[in-house]
Amino acid sequence: MVVLNHRHMVATVSTGASRTDPVPWAGIAGWYTGDMVPEPVALDPDPVIEAYKRDVDRTLLRENLKLSPEERLVKLQDFVRFAADLREAGRRARG
Amino acid sequence: MTPPTDFATLLQRLLSSHVEFILIGGVAGNVHGSARATYDIDVLYRRSSDNLARLVEALGPLEPYPRGAPPGLPFTFDVDTLRRGLNFTLTTSSGDIDLLGEVTGGGMYDDLLTASEEVPLFGLSCRCATLEALIRMKRAAGRPKDFEALAELEAIREERRRE
Image (cartoon, rainbow over all chains, first blue to last red; front, side, top):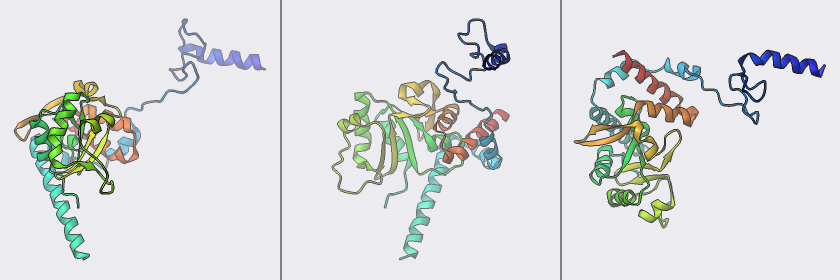
């Protein structure tokens, strides 16, 4: 039974292995390294990020892309100052 | 209370003192078109002795202090302090700045140099991480809080390609 399983595994995975691979399962799309630790798999596109992308306001991005880099930073600066003013007003209102 | 970060003042001071740095993080994202608010500046600085001295010259007058730390710590913003540390999250009289010697997905200054570009800002030329590099760093960080930012940066890339 053990021998049968072993042969079955080799037959199944050897299609992706080259003749120079040191072990018969080395060709499984790089899943296993020599110490049998799975390598991280990079998903491109990443389905999680794609899901987040649906909520991105692209009209806002298109408006920003019409500006120069400096104009974009000035816009950010205006917002940061405005947020600070709001915080200060809230602090005063609370006494 | 910490004053709102004055991006122009901080960048102008760094650039005028010829500090070798690369703008990264949220402000760099805004330079590329991001609409996300950010309240501090992140810079990846070169760790050479000369550059540490230039950093001290540029930011020293703004009295940098570890952000969130209780007052009264024996903190001196000088070359020795910078040499003993690597990444510093600081607050200054012109707002908050993170000085990073190394960043996940970007490495050190010299590693990221080829993935940066000169951008004209406030009459000076500022080295800024490319959009691709920012995406790579966000991906490498892999923090859930960065997912929205990463999605937006990738959307900017798509919009640029569409232009």
